[in-house]
Length: 226
Image (cartoon, rainbow, N blue to C red; front, side):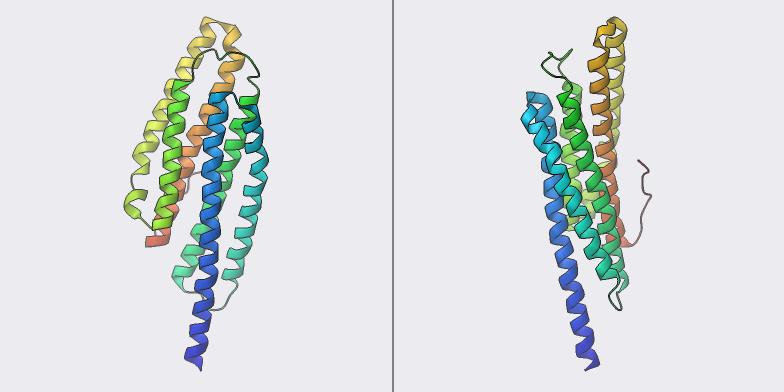
């Protein structure tokens, strides 16, 4: 009977962990959609889409709270094994990064509204390139979690360096434009803030992969402070 009891507890753990995993994957998908839509809203000057991203952010916040409650419920169950603790801890950390990514997507959308009907002072090619890189990083970070793929997780630091370099290039270009014509300042500052949010998205993608590594190996390099 004791063996049957242990099996039933194990089955309950696995069932609860599977529920958390499925909810987290859905939250990942919603977060990726938010980033993509925020960049599209900026590029296409689509104010309705920008407002939609901002409205949908509340649903992602609710998902974070829901998953957090499920994780705490698992931790309060009897006799969890070390792997359970690692998986739940990784999930709790990941939902924090995902929620911040979604917040930054909403912030980018809010900033895109501030351009109004004015023409861009320049085409934001470096910002759009940053966006493509960071979106792919978040997608691969999520995929590394879904597939428990450490190899995929290990490549993101190099790509994050590319994003950082693009941010520095963008910043130099915008500072130069302000010096050449102070009337460019308002838009330049908006673009600078958007670029900074995208740079942070890359950091969050790296965080996600580091938590995948922690879940798989029990070792975590370091959590970035953002």
